[in-house]
Every structure is written in structure tokens, then in C-alpha cells.
Length: 123
Image 1 (cartoon, rainbow, N blue to C red):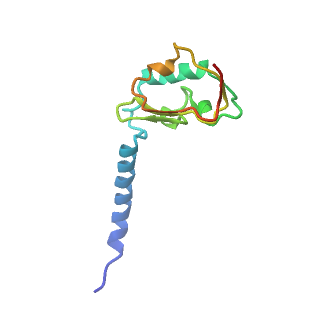
Image 2 (cartoon, rainbow, N blue to C red; image 1 turned 30 degrees about the vertical axis):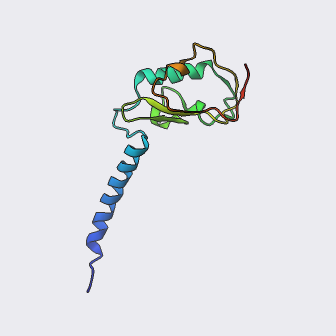
Image 3 (tube, rainbow, N blue to C red; image 1 turned 60 degrees about the vertical axis):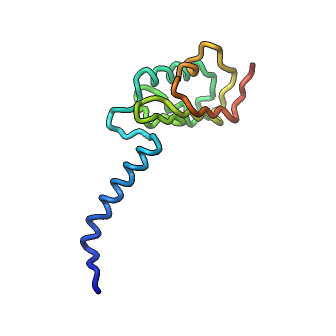
């Protein structure tokens, strides 16, 4: 029995395309279709960034948070399909100081996961 390989070459890119979309939907990563990253949530994160003391030169995540880059590329942030921040990983960002009770961090109502490990917080 001879199997024609040529028709399968057309099918493989389609499988890859659908697989990638499926992974994005499951993981909650941005899809780039404009329906993610609520403006209010972006502003809360930018406000949080402005109140944190951190080393710009050593930062890998916080330095990517700005209005000129798409929110999907903001390091350490995972958005759900409705545009809310559900996970924030600010580990090893050389953050010093702390948070006060009015920090915008506490207004991220859909936040499910927060990683602040390996920073230099004080009380």
C-alpha cells in the first residue's frame, strides 16, 4: 500500500495553526485580537509600577510595562480571555520597600496568583 505524502503537507500547517490557538486559549495568553487587556487593568499595573522601587537595569519584567508596548508582551503578567489580570509574577525583580494599603495591587480583583519571591521587601 502506497501512502501519498504530498497531500499531508497541506494538512500539517492547518493542524499547527489550530493547535497553537488551542494552547493560547487554554493558557490564557493574549491572542492579539483586541479583546484582551482591559484598559483599567493596564492602568492599575502601570500605577503599581510607578509606586515600586526597583532596579531598571536588572529588571526583566517591570521594564516591559509601558503604554508603547502591547500588554501581551508585559513580562510576568497573564491575562484571562476577558482581559483581567489573573497572574502576576514579579519574582527576582530587585524590588525594595513594600506596599501600602492603597496600592493598586489590591484593586486587581481577578488576581489568582502572585509571586513576589526573591525581592527585598521591608515592613
